[in-house]
Image 1 (spheres, helix red, strand yellow):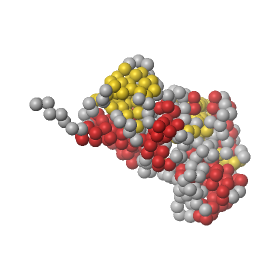
Image 2 (tube, rainbow, N blue to C red; image 1 turned 135 degrees about the vertical axis):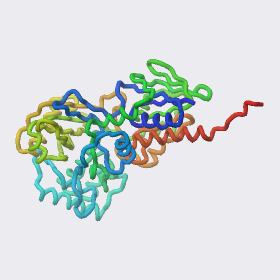
Image 3 (cartoon, one colour; image 1 turned 180 degrees about the horizontal axis):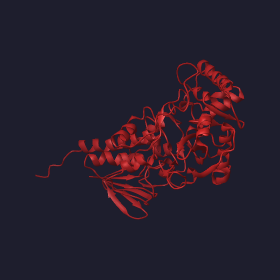
Image 4 (tube, rainbow, N blue to C red; image 1 turned 180 degrees about the vertical axis):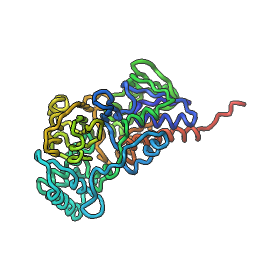
Length: 425
C-alpha cells in the first residue's frame, strides 16, 4: 500500500515517519527547496556561528512530542527560558506578560508602570473574563481598559510572527500557554525537520497542482511527475491547499472550512548586535513593544554579541519589503531598552506573506474546535493534517507534528480494518 504526502513541513514528515515505521510505502512531495515548512534556519548571514530561526522558534512546556523527539535524537536545547514572570498573584494570566519588558511610545516602561498596567488588566480579567470568541482588542474595549493598558494587553499578539491584536483570540492570552517556560534549539528548529526526515523519500521542488480520484486510487500531479497512490495526506498551509485542483471537487463543508479560516500574515526581523551582555541585561530574554516589531527575544551569540529576533505582522504598509526600514525599527526598540545606540553587525528580514506556499498562518485558536475538526476530517482517501488541524497546540510545531501522526494513524487503522479478499476460490 502506498501513501502520497503533500508538504514536507513537520506535519508531512511526522506523518511519513509514522507510516514508514509500520511498513507503508510513502512518498513526500514538497513544493519548495526546503524541509520543515516555517521551521527554517539561516546559517549564512550572521557572524560568529550565529543561527537565525526564520519562522518557528520555541518549544514550550507541554509540547511533549517534540521535546521527547529532541531528547531521543540528541538535539540540543537551550537552557529553559521564562519569557515573562508569573503574576499578578501566584499564577499566569493574560496580564502576566505586562510584567516583563515593555516599550510603549518609544520609551522603556519602569517596573511600577508595568505593575500598574498588569494590575488593571488582571482586575478586568477577574471581573469580566473574556470569551474564546473575543479578540484581544474587542475584550479590552468591552471591559473599558485604559488606552495604555489596552494597547499593552493587545501587544502580546506579537508572540506569533503573523498576528495582530485585532485578529488574535483571547484564547491565546487567557490564561496563555506560550512563553511561560520554553526552550529554543541550539541550532535552529529546522534541525527537527532534517533529523525526522532521515530515511524518507522526500522530493523537493514539486508543487502539487491536481489531486484526482482514479478508480480506488488517487493520482497526484506535480510540475515534474504524476504519482498514483492508495491514499493522500495533505499537510499544506490553508492558502496552498486552496490552490490545488481536486477532482472530484471537495465537498462544500470542506471548502467552506478552508475558505472561512481566518489567516494572518507577517514575518521575522532578525539582527545581531555588539555589546551583547549590556543588551541582554537591559532587554533579555524578551521585550514587548507597540512598534511594528511587536515583540523580540534575544539569543546570546559569540564575541559578546546578541541576536534579536523580532516578529512583525503585515499591516499592508510595505515595511516588510523595506529591509533597512524594518531593521531600523528593531534597532530603535533595542536602543529604547538599553539606553544606547546599538551597533548592528548583521540583519535578516523574512517576509512569510510573500511566500507562495505559506502566505499566511491560521490565527491561534480562531475558528474554534469546530473549524479545526472540519479542516482535519478525511474525505474518502484524502486525509488532512497541518497546524490548522491541530487539536492541541494549534499553530505551533507541536500541533503540526501531532496532526501528521494523527492522519497517519487514520490510514493505518483503515489498513488494519480493510477486509482481505479470498483469492483461493
